[in-house]
Every structure is written in structure tokens, then in C-alpha cells.
Amino acid sequence: VAQLINKENGTSFTDCDVSLFEAFAIFCGLGIHNTQMYENACKLMAKQKVALECLSYHATASNEATGKLLKENIPSAESFNLYSFTFIDFELSDEDTCKATVRMFLECNLVQQFHIPYEVLCRWILSVKKNYRPVKYHNWRHALNVAQTMFAMFKTGKMERFMNDLEILGLLVACLCHDLDHRGTNNAFQTKTESPLAILYSTSTMEHHHFDQCVMILNTDSNNIFQALSPEDYRRVMKLVETAILSTDLAMYFKKRNKFLELIDNGEFDWQSDDRKDLLSGMMMTACDVSAIAKPWEVQHRIAKLVADEFFDQGDLEKMQLKVKPIAMMDREKKDELPQMQVEFIDIICLPLYRVLSDTFPWVKPLYQGTLENRKHWQDLAEKVEMGLTWIDHDTIDKPVEAFTESEETKDIELTVQTLHTVTSAPPIEIKKRHKKLCCIL
Image 1 (cartoon, rainbow, N blue to C red):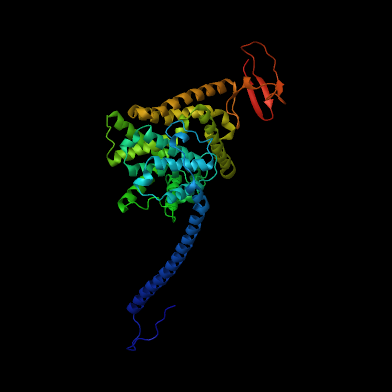
Image 2: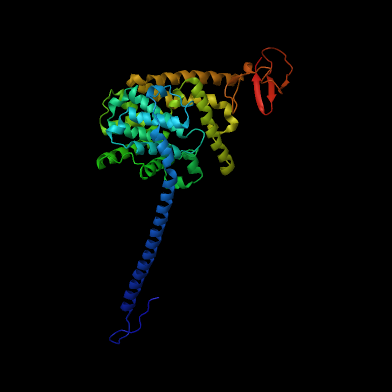
């Protein structure tokens, strides 16, 4: 409360005095309010800093784990099959995945070139691994595979001739960090649930979060593998990492793909300008991100089940939390459509990209050839499903009916044979086992 009692000259207050005082009182009130807001903001910033310090501590690899990796002998790139587009991580232990990552940095001469302390590199790799959640597909091993494909594109695919050492460093870091803290749900789910991440980032929600997590790890003590870079190089590599991670959003890919195809169609093969190099890097990131589709069939088949499982889990969440029916690719009840959905994914996203890359850069053709081969398998499987000859199950994707033997799968199976009139009009024999269904057209 502000109060005026007497004027010095003893005269009464005029209307002008009252107006001036009211205006003054308002400014005083605003000043007090702003001071309180500033104090609250300082407290919130302090709380945020404490929270980030706690997060950074728990997000950083332990000294024990770092010391162990530091002392380990790092096998050759050939022993890990790192130069091949058919690299498989399934047989690698968690420790070996970290060693393989170290080997890629050593093989590209990045440790020596950018004076990265070896202990810092080991701690950073372990910290990145630690910050991937144990979801079924978008986990640390997916990040490793994406980085390895980028490495193979650089070395075997000879794409390193279009990049300088700093750009190679940035793209490898982007690959390893491109799905950090993935929750097993996509951008659409974040938007539908109005999650804090969706409120924070209106577009490319998860990709922005992945980059923020990358920055958080790099800013943690003893994790900054960019510490020896000049301010200008640091700015450039961080911008490259951000752009590359955002490029893994398929919405961004579709925006850039037409421009990339236009350049190729016009015979533009000079990739030295920043804009064109950014475009090429984006295409390479997507090519690496979906490269599981080009792996040998037994590997691609297994990975497809992991992806489907993760998508089905999101579909289950949408049913429970949002009370909506998920799209087919995330609906567990439509798992039989998986082969056809794989064919469509290949036709819409993978083949157009790998075709133009292999036509322009012939040494990356194994990605295109592997994808074509797997498309044949998925198409064949889709046709079998359409005919009722193949059972698509949560655990077994493509086990043909004839593979079920009496000694194994036919135990406890009840056969119901309907009346058969003619061969052409005969209905299918229904084979029921628990809640699973097999159909064979006779």
C-alpha cells in the first residue's frame, strides 16, 4: 500500500497529483512483481542446474567401466567385419560393440587427427551406450549398426572422398547419437499424447530430443570428444551433427529427396558446396538408418520382428491410453499384413534412395542389391499369406504350413475338416492351436 499524507507547501492534492501518483504506484508494483519473478526464475534455474548435474552424473559412464575399456585390446576392423555392408552385431557382446565403435574411430584416424584423448573417447562411447533405453529396436545396437553402415559407406563405398575429416567425425557421432533416449514411440505418438517433448518441440520432436541428449553428454565433464577443436570447427561440427540427426526424421527425408533427385537428374555431381554436401549427408543418414533392410535375409527377417514388436507395443499404448485404433503397422491384430507392409516400405522409401545412390556412387550398390533380394523374400511371403499358406505369428513370421511336423508342432492341435465337394470349391482346412490359426488351401 502506498499513501501520501501532506504536501510540503500545505496545499491540497490536485487531480494531476493523484494521476501521477497512481502511475507511479503502478510502476512500483511492476518493479516489485518483476523482482519476485526474477527471484523465482533464479531459483528455478538453480533447481534445473542441480537436476542437470544429477542427470549428467548418472548419464556418464563409470570410471570402472571406462578403465576396463581403456585397457582392452581393440581387435581389427576385419575381425568385426566393419568394412562390409553385411555386418552383423548379433554375435557381439555388449563389450565388443563398444570395441567395434572404438575401432571405427581409430580406423578413420579421428583420434589422432583431432587430438581426442583416448580415455575421453572410451568414456563418451560408454556414456552414449548408457543413454539408450532397452527398447526392442531403437536401442544402442541399432545406433551401432547405423554408424557401421556409415563407416562402410565411407571406406568400402568410397564416400569419404566427398567429406573432409571434420565432416566424417560429425557424421559418425550423429549416427551413434541419432536415437539417444528413444522411448519406443514415434513423433506422432508424442503429439497425440501431448507429451512434454511435443510441447517443447513442435516438429521433429524425437530428433530434437536426440540431439539435445547428444549435447548433454558432450557437455559433461570428461565426455567432450570435441574439446581440442577450434571454436570455428566446434561450431561447424555441432551444426553438422544437429542437421544430420534431424535428417533421420522421414518427414525431412521426403522434403530433401526430391531436391536430391533433381540434382542427379540434371547431372549435378559437385558436392563441395555446403548446401549440396548437407543434402548428400542427409541422404546418407537415411540410407544408414534404414540399412537393416539390406542385410542378409536371415538378419533382416529377425530385425523386422524387433521393429514390429516395438511398433505393436506403441499400438497397445494407443489402445489403452488414447482409446483409438492404431494404424495397421502398429496394430498387433494385423500382424499378418507385415510382409506386405515391408514390401511397401521398401518400394516407397528404400529402393528409390538406394537406386539413385548406387547409380551415382557405384560402390554402395550392395545396399541396393541387398534390398532387392529382401524384397523378393517379403513379396513371396506376402503372396503366401494372401493364399493362406503361411502363418504370421508374433514369434514366428514365416513358418510354412508344411514345416509343421507331427512330432513337434502338431501336438495338441485340433483338426477340423469341413465337407469337401470339389477340389476347386473346397473350403480351407482349419488348424487351430490355442489362439493361433493356420489355413491350407487344398
